[in-house]
Length: 120
Length: 108
Image (cartoon, rainbow over all chains, first blue to last red; front, top):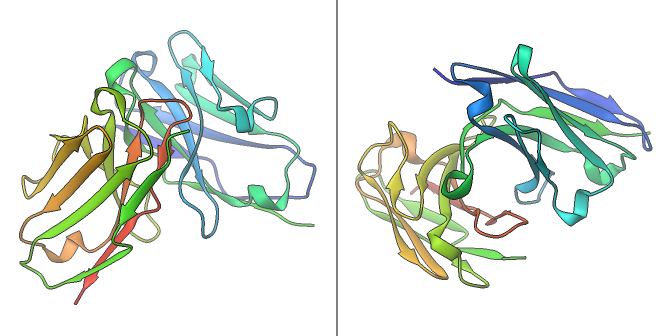
């Protein structure tokens, strides 16, 4: 069965960088991509971008361009999301989710979530 | 950016009743690239419906999706205790992909 297991909670100071990992199992890692989604307190779910585990190609929405980097490491079936220049507005639960391509870009399996708290 | 609006915000129903949840998009969702997710407290979302009406693997047939263009509906027939949760719609037609604010289905 498909599992996505994320790294643990993080506490960061404003201006810092956070990296969240997402280890996949139960499927061929390079046959899908990974999207990252976050939910800040009182806000709706927010899509942060997508990476193809096959090509490494990424698609970041304008809001996060220049501040987010998504990568994958195929030998361990792990995806990473790095977010720089953190502010209190980045306090949120961050999720990775398996995503297909084309008509299958929905998110069929999700990680358990990683709480990132940004506080001075 | 496609903005998704969901109604009602909260739906209070008794077990065994039918729930009808609405999702409206600010512009047409191409090819009906619209999904529905269920989320319970402390858990990640679970995919219920994709492509507006296709049930995800393992999802009971009491969950059904319909609609096209800008108006979509999630129907839950015969509510069971485990169905009381928050439901989100999600469009993956245009970047940036966006989500609705959610409808909470709680026990009346």
